[in-house]
Image 1 (cartoon, helix red, strand yellow):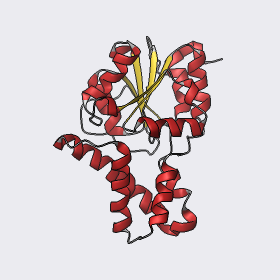
Image 2 (cartoon, rainbow, N blue to C red; image 1 turned 60 degrees about the vertical axis):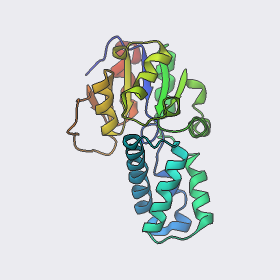
Image 3 (cartoon, rainbow, N blue to C red; image 1 turned 180 degrees about the horizontal axis):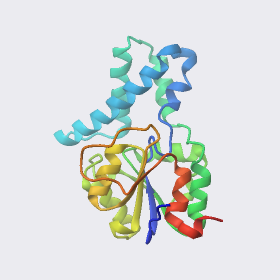
Image 4 (cartoon, rainbow, N blue to C red; image 1 turned 180 degrees about the vertical axis):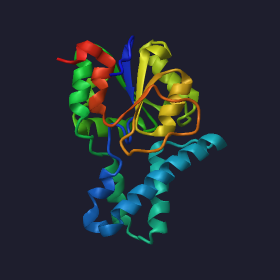
Length: 231
């Protein structure tokens, strides 16, 4: 089994890694019906696309605005005109469900005295709400938002935030993301990286390949802690 030695901190992407981005639309199935999944998929795709385009064009706005813009595009595309439902979906995005293995994984890592952090496109308020809803807020040493540098991932200045805040070299940090583009870009920055490939995606064709793939975060402690993580 792969073991990553010398890891002093684990840094997590938030959306799709710790928190299930589909849970907002899934929770509104009573209103959306069979459209819930197409809405969820297009909403997420446009959310990411808008973050990248704003970064390239130097037109930054925060992730709450980007998320709302992406939802407006999606609802228009699917011919859903319902302001009340829009408000409900946005509120649901603040309380996304954590994946089932997340709390136990974080507790195992925390018990080993590794530092834990979130590094996300989300605003501080969005991240605080999701972490509090999942009951995991107290497990993190830092919750880092791109708002500190006003540009979205995968800009290197975002990844540098983790090094600066945790006072660690990139090689002492294990970065974990379920987003392939994020995992590859974090590896190119210099982190040790585990790609949590929850959705069985094909490898990206960008620099650089993560150290390994895992199916869920439950695999993480044994890789990072080695023998220390078996108890």
